Length: 410
Length: 72
Image (tube, rainbow over all chains, first blue to last red; front, side, top):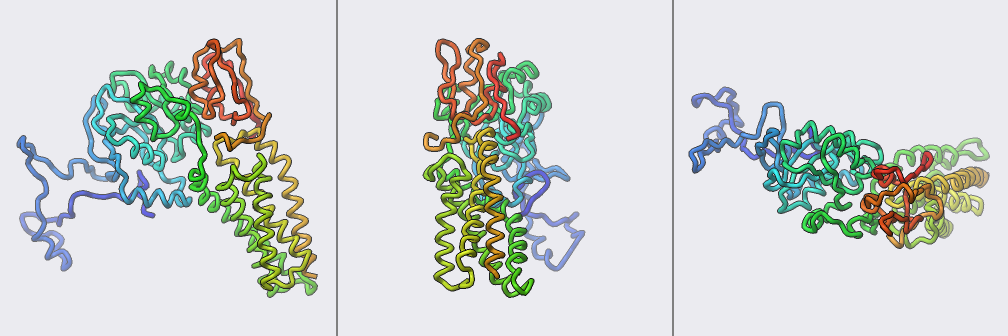
């Protein structure tokens, strides 16, 4: 993915490339450029009012124009970029990459004040995070609206997580209100903060430190326009988090991606312990049995990081670790039956089968438990309770499984 | 969210009714809508849906709400 300094999107310049020339004499003639020189047109125009309109009027040496910026407008607080509500192909491609966990923490936009539509002194100010995925999500829902968008520096993290981590905070909001001279841009004294930002923002403190009143807007960007039409009132549906099958599924690529590195280390360990046999160490069994072990690991990973999150509400029990055991057991049984029948690993035997089963289920249970950190409904106290109970069980299972796996080789 | 519930009776959420000044802010910020206003006072209507996010604590102007999860 191509990234530049201040945003995650590839720049698009609107003006065609012009050859460098002075009085018709090429300063840097080259064979490639020669036929192009004659066809270059002056795209700067004089408009109906007789004003000279240059197509490079938004360009500054050393700066790069972000592709989501449409134009700039002048306000009492200086020049403010007006952003597009339509996402371009480059935005969609980079969204895909980020969902897969690629450059997840460098996907940022420059914090500060932006506008959308034709905002004026009475327009609302919507506060958001500088994670570009969040920013894109907000702007595409604001089509047709005239508003200001105040982007806080959350280090490329979404509103809720940033609020929990303390970057989407009272301090940062007050800083931006002052730095961007919001009082000069709008006549009113209110900012609309997304509800989930309340974890890091204190309405009372923002008021006393900046004079601006915090109005908590809806959780989801697609409710903003309805919220504004309803006289800035949110109903219960707008105020409640959801965790639909799509919302769970879209998070799974990152779950899988973050478990790949530990998985690689486990794979190496698997090759080593799979090679231990009566002849001390055998490279051929390290490879054969190691691959079988890796298959069990992949099954556990698939079950714990993909299937369990997606099927979450339909898997019995409340504890995630236990949900992972249930799903993991089903997949592990299928795996063991497949291995026993296929003859891929005829030497696995009973002990080996139990070892593979336990190993696969443990991975699934651990990863499912890990998913508690991603959901919008698990309390830290609950997570602590289940970790205290299940981590010892998972460790014991891992030890037994390793023992049986080595035993099975003799 | 009715079909997605986590472990019961673990939240450390405490609401001091006497300190509540009835501002309704907690009913606005809770992402699980567990607060409701009754007789100009906030009440917890769905304690086990609390995920201890702390939005209510952070915004309660009278310090009537406390939540104290451990390290998590």
